[in-house]
Amino acid sequence: MRRKGLVILAPLLLLLATFYGLSYGSVPISLQEIWAVFTTDSQPLHEKIIYNLRFPRVLIGLLVGACLAASGALLQGVMKNPLADPGVIGVSAGGGLAAIISMIVFPQYSYLLPAVAFLGSLATSIVIYLLAWDKGASPLKIVLAGVAINALLGAGTNGFMVVFSDRVQAVLPWLAGGLSGKSWHHLSFMAPYAIAGLAACVFAIKPSNLMLLGDDSAQLLGQRVEAQRLFIILLSSLLAGTAVSVGGLIGFVGLVVPHAIRILVGDDYRYLLPLSVIGGASLVVLADTIARSWFDPIELPVGILLAALGAPFFLYLLKKRRIA
Image (cartoon, rainbow, N blue to C red):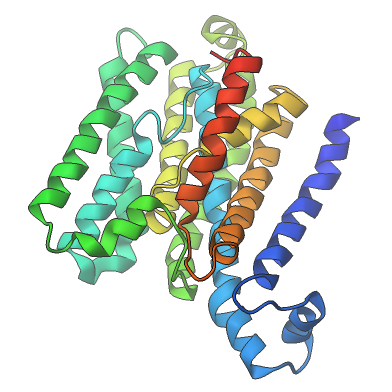
């Protein structure tokens, strides 16, 4: 009953988050006025605000949150570790370093940013996988290798910023994680990658459920464990790289959202994965709306707000739920 109830409530939460993101800001717009923008003639000011500013930003927030939550849920399942997250094991850091190099050294190729971030995340995932390989890649070794690579990539990012200190100002908001200034242009070059990655998650549900039984049991059921683990890691890299390319280094979504959903529905990925996608999308849009409207006249990067909210919640889970 709880699962069925959440399946009904989750889309409603997503819809409410979307309308909240469209309604609130420096210029409040009522639901009736929003409806008028999409259906009939409306005030030119409201139409410009909705179409040019808020609607693309909300759609980008939905995709970024969905990608991060799906990536985190998949990594936690395939590695059997509740701390597995794109930001913790270095996948996001790899995409972030590649994106920073692209933005600073090759700004004229900004339209390739999602592909560059994905390749950075993919390369990082492959390196982690190879480092952890020893007649198979155990989940524990993958996490340990990922933590080490994450630290190395962080040092590389900081070093690169020192070398190009005269150009780093442009990427500082991106490093904090935020959706400020995002437009239809950003949506157009990230949407194909995000939609393809989220659609491919359908094929990861069954392997993720079987891997929860353990590698030996999954192999007895006819599964090619290593091939499926590699597929899920690569898919997580695509999702994380896509989110990083536009949203920057937004943390805790892929870590906290799957935990919260798992508490409510259990480990069955038929429910866990789609509800995590919806939960992550809703969380990022709600947090972004709060970050840009509650701290007027400044706009707080959503990554900072999510870290401030996500860290205490994760510590609560760590203490009460004994997740590690």
